[in-house]
Image 1 (cartoon, rainbow, N blue to C red):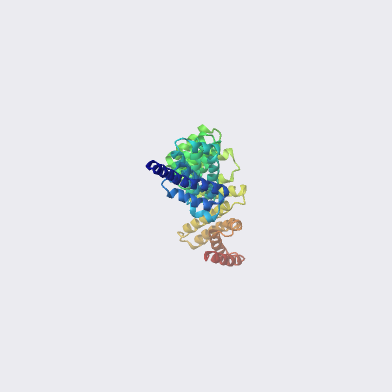
Image 2 (spheres, rainbow, N blue to C red):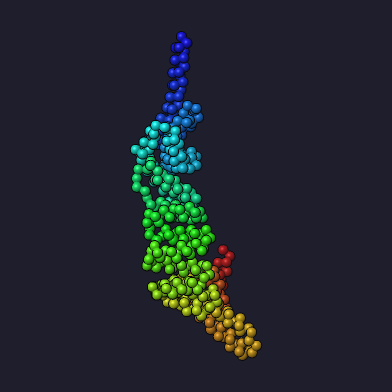
Length: 391
């Protein structure tokens, strides 16, 4: 009789365990049916029971549910997981860890589950990136990379995912990670010289201008004849205040591409910052001739004339002779007048720029004394400027 009772007890225990594991089977069935609320309820019961909470199938079902919640894109299920795809990946990995016989791993490979998860992570990462949620984008792309580099992924590795991860890392200012991803792109010869420039920018982001310069100077060895390297060097030297070095490479760039307006613009702004106004005017005039519809060039040339005239007025204030002083002021006002058409064109190209409106206001005020027709323009720009400044 005791043996019978013992047998009944064993059967009862087994049936209890089977009942709880049956919750997992139900959960998987509900997921296939799209009844995710019922699947969640069954799975919660399975995790609450000692017999099934550490069962590999329970974690596999959790992974399936989490991925299904993401793909359903239904606010009704948002509370189930804070990071559905991240939790799905963690659950699948845990399931394989618990399954010593390897059945779950085989199921994941056969059903290409990690392939679909990688696609979901790419979509999620792209969505985060577009929303400028770069931390989330980086996490998604990093997980995608982990999956596609594993032996559970049954597909071809997409090199672009490393570039995406690198861009997200740059925007998070995680430059070490960015460099690692872009170096992978470079090794795979993905997008030519682009990943090398991203590495350079990341090194700059780390604050190491010396290393960044050395990196750029070495690029012609890898990409002989690529003229964009010269432009990058010009940009670096301009930002670093190494104007002599910048001029050296600008001269080279002009010989290669004499009609590149940006080279003349860059040189003009460099001279303007050095208060070499005549040189700035010469370079910016050429930039405007080559591309007349660029706001920056028009504004820069106007500013060069204004700054030159202001410097002339400052020097005129030291003249003690009234006639000579008046003559010097008239010459300076003539230079101010040369700024007017460029500032007006800049305003036409960008009507809402406050700095342009302020410059025009000052020019109209100064020049209307000799040209009364500018009084109306002065009143109009003052009204527009006042309205803009109150916003």
